[in-house]
Length: 442
View (spheres, rainbow, N blue to C red):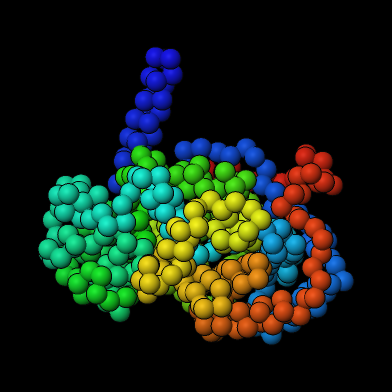
């Protein structure tokens, strides 16, 4: 018994120390590898070839052709069962690689939903109070480097303010997570600026409004939530998400992404722009001009705010665990889920979700140059996700057209296939040796 206690304490102390040491540089890479083969890698497009969904196929194909989108992945669940999972177009046009359900896409700000779920899991476990202060001597982030700030009002910022985008930073004043080169120069540090550098720089400036008074969408606020998760759990951010949320749900192929093409996961798509290719200075600070989607954004720095990559089937599996629908136990309590989507409880910004309406629809959008993702929890027990690897001249405005197309085509389906692709392990037609492995980077 004493030996067990000692091992447990060693585990906690070791990983707590690792989390602290890595957090000085940003978000820690995962300390663990997952040898489980993701169910999404066992799926094939042909598994969703049904007469009843043929019109759905056609509508999606027409949409991609109209907007000149190279590739997309779509997953739909109904009554907690995965009834449709299919890739369209190419994952890598240059080599003719076809999109399959197991391909990973950047999900951009859909990552905020993952982070919010992680925070609410800590909340349910009694490890965090949403009214806890973030900064100041009694705050969660009371490290000495964060105790120097220009505006004493930062001491009033709470976890809830970060969740619902009311902490006091205005998006119109510039997003610090997208200005790491400027901040590195201002802080006189080697680029790219680390998250700690960015926090220190942001604290050296006045808030744009008093905490809790106004709503203004903030990537920086969700980056701070990643730090808070590390502090409260004693684990690197990604590991806490994996072991408290993803693994219990049987999700094994969602990861924090990387900035450059040569760093991408083996089953990750290539990103494109069908408009004028935008070249920007590399976040590495080497003076090189790069495509905005390969080195123009610091994906590692964005982490909890926009850094995750996922396949459509595994992402929809997460959604079925936080949708409040009957038939499958959710990973959070009903009252917690309600708190996340009810503006009367969460505030205008909600917790993680981008919006909700009186009809029972909840949605979350994500956009980067080169990629976009839209998640919908639709009333009536239907959830869907669509991810694309090509940006258009509409930029994030493409979500309005995507949602219109998806609502229209889903409503046409009168009879859904009587299948559950979540259960592919029980009838997998491929021998295990032929299933591609997940990325060995982590």
